[in-house]
Length: 413
Image 1 (cartoon, rainbow, N blue to C red):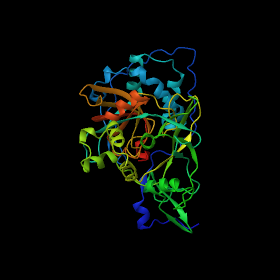
Image 2 (cartoon, rainbow, N blue to C red):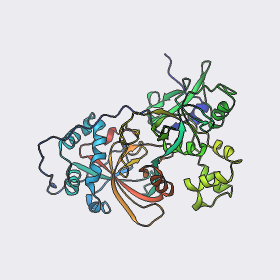
Image 3 (cartoon, helix red, strand yellow):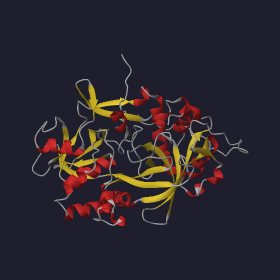
Image 4 (cartoon, helix red, strand yellow):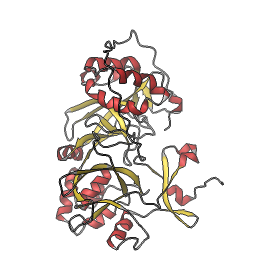
């Protein structure tokens, strides 16, 4: 087979995945019945390692550099850490640490903190320009009203991945394009851009396959188009069905077009002030301007496809393939921070100077999460979580915790 060659228009389509289709989660093993003695900090620490040139945005630091590290209830992060370990334990760099953690009884805060101090090396996350601060936003698992079938009220489809969507992992062709994927559809022997949001929604309005050939299969139908739009931004959520039961859905794939912020558009058009361009502000604007709403939503060409998730999960599945934990999971850019790694986050509460300094796990990704110091903080499920997530747009710093023998030279950025 001849190697794939990207033409100029293909390069224009390059867009990082919001998360690949995650594997079914592996449940964390039950703790061993025999207690393990508390971990005690080691004697004088070894000299800080030299960061590998292949991963220059992580800078090794001493534990004392982590702002308010001693103030966090580190034991509360342990269940999320075990979720990461259920996948990471299969990887050589994490195997010993995760096997030990999974065999321990649930530690208290001091024991958990000592475990990380003894076995991990902290790295300050920096931007590519060397700066140490970045944007911290929030996301959550929303609840929508809907149905499994189309009704007069439930008219807006949640599509599964279309059969004709082609995804190319560019790293298999160009190693320098790691974590990038190309999406499109075949037209004869050519790969062409996939349908935009406007084209997909027009096809639905005009019947299957009209006017642009899109033939999507809906797995559910939502009652509100704005709620559905924000479900696509969040990446996962629940649909409340007429009988009161919930259908949980999660990110499956994306149409390959870049995400465009409709909040930013409303500010640029003078429709909202900057401080009003939150999720709640956009919803309020949509309620006041129903005639303008379709054009606004169509201005974002990105479109997310979903899949139904199993019942009984403790949380939505992130890109790592494990359930997310409210208040202890974040989405990151995997080019700069390895998925699954513990991260100490120092930021503030939404729209507040109150500190939010917390040990979290990098368990998810997102199309808008780009950069070495960039995180999306998972607040959990429901309206209260949505209120906090919608207001969160803070500055913050991040420290990545990696096993002391972690092979930084082979990290895939």
